[in-house]
Length: 208
Image (cartoon, rainbow, N blue to C red; front, side, top):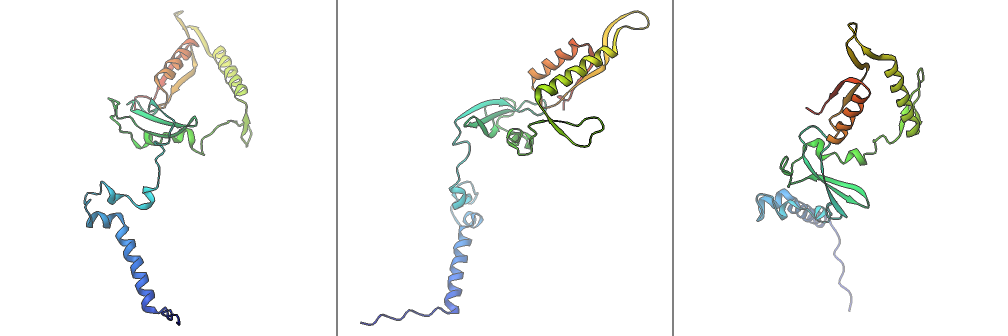
């Protein structure tokens, strides 16, 4: 028995095939499924595509969750830090926080970049006086350089008394300015350090 001849592909069949693909694509769009299906508010299956359905949240694969406080500003929003293989993989608001109740501002929500951003500076860079290029320094070397300059400045600008003989025991050659990303414990230590070396000009940005 002779095989039936295969129908030749023509412009009409190609158009119908393209139309079928277009129809399937349109019907698979979340907004179309939302308007035509049983999920008009887009809170369920209508808002999920095949691609998003195959994704796995980093919060689900984390090894553990650490509660912390956002390092920005003085509000102190609660955070949940998700850790996998001892690396921060995601940071979200802590719904148990009485301060923020699970909410984070854009900066707080993106604070994971403080650890994982490829632009994060991980080495001490130093440009010598008159130099045009930055050079990398060992942390211990940089710390010793800073300590030497602090000691020298304190000795050069130290004031025992004023013109009337009143006791001062201070230096106006050193000042401390804390940033909004410092936590309470860090600010406490900075205040103790600068007070101990006789500095009186100590300020902080935490009020913003």
